[in-house]
Image (tube, rainbow, N blue to C red; front, side):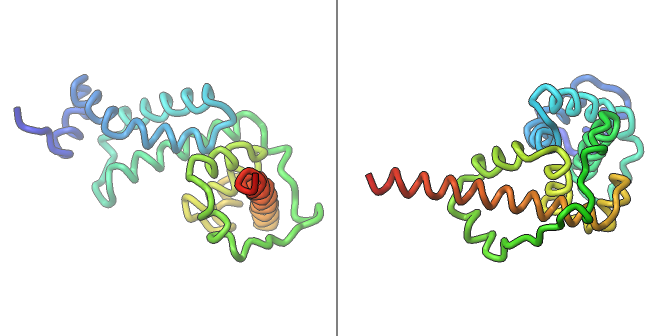
Length: 189
């Protein structure tokens, strides 16, 4: 049996063909769950976001214009679904404004520090960030949004976005340092 092309998959999903939907789901489920998890407070919330996001994919696939990759289009839907959930949960009230002790990040050597750890360890540290910091960190570092775009997306000021990113990086830097010290202790035993 011949492998289904991306165009065939899209056409099948537009026609609500279960096999095509299943193939599309299987093709992108692992990556998209990871995206949802980055923006969620728990695994359960990530699962809800993931399933809601895929429903949106199937309901709107006829709008995919092939101007970019299908994976990128699906990713945008997943991120937007996670952000919608974040706003609905009213977590935005805990966002800290820039006027509340803006701390400048001192992570000029972040790449060197981060390279000492496994990606899974880093993702766990990021996941443990307070929600307001995690959202801004992920949008800035992983999605490549600028502070102005983050501010517009989340309904906050650019200063608040910068402050939350700085605080997220400071927390991560402390965690990395703490874990590095533990690693050094273990090695020296």
